[in-house]
Length: 125
Image: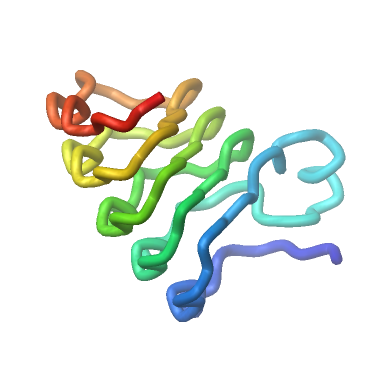
């Protein structure tokens, strides 16, 4: 569909959305043809999607910090943000995701230590 650009703020209005899968857009086919967003920041509005179970945005060029609002989605079971350009520390608020089973953050530009609160994630596989 030749979609490109940044996430619209209206993303947070999709209140019944349970899955966001934008993974794999860093491949030559996707980015070269501008089929979808390959860069920019992950919008804070993603935290307004309280029914999310899966967020998969791996293998893109997303930058900036992980939006703190995403840690308000208590139903989240899978958070995959691997192979991006995300930076800063991994927020301690990650420990709020009590139902999280999958957490993939490798191959980013995170700094600091793994937050102690990650030990609260008792369902991690």
